[in-house]
Length: 240
RNA sequence: ACCUGUUCAUACUGGA
Image 1: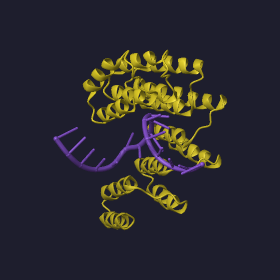
Image 2 (image 1 turned 90 degrees about the horizontal axis):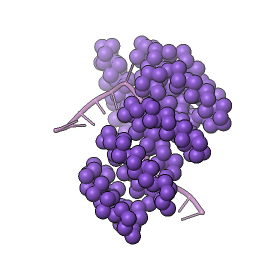
Image 3 (image 1 turned 120 degrees about the horizontal axis):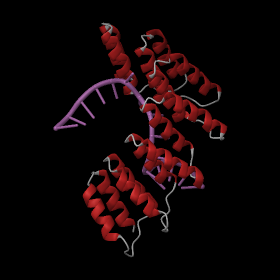
Image 4 (image 1 turned 45 degrees about the horizontal axis):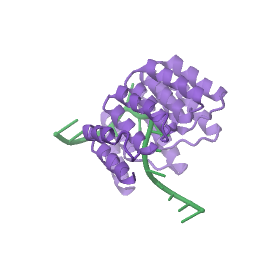
């Protein structure tokens, strides 16, 4: 079983969908059952390839067997639907997950991300409030997703409020959060605020990554500040 | 015992 599992995971890594499906149907009803984790990897592979219908069949097929779907399975499927723009399917799956008590903060994050990518601001903020009422604690992914949404909608003040809120609640921003904020500020031409955040992140022990530098350097070049850009570049090299 | 391992976030950059 383990051997089949790792074989399938390897095939998934290489994107060999047809080989994976062949192997799955070959094993169907056989003595060796694949575990939940292996199924989850297959679900993600199919979703990434846009074959959400096929993934969903597998998910439903997992239900009765010893290999029960877990949070990963449902969340993977949920993300597949929402990234494919299949909101009806995503919503009904989400409801099913609620009924089964199989919803966690990742499920909410996934829904929020899907809604925000579709520009559905109102529904996303509703869900964001709703999850708090249900006792699900927003984490750094949740906040970063919402901050991205607000910047996308040009609502910088709301983004800043959320950023402050997460800190007040003891949810520390990570490098992705900072990159989102910095990119958002620069988009709104708030260069000073952006640079302040770069210092702030360093002060709090959050190291900028390559992406941070790329965002800032690109902006410096656009502003015609080549000197600043080169300075940043060498700083980046020094810091690895 | 501990760590890692399958799910969600960044309008950066690159590859075919």
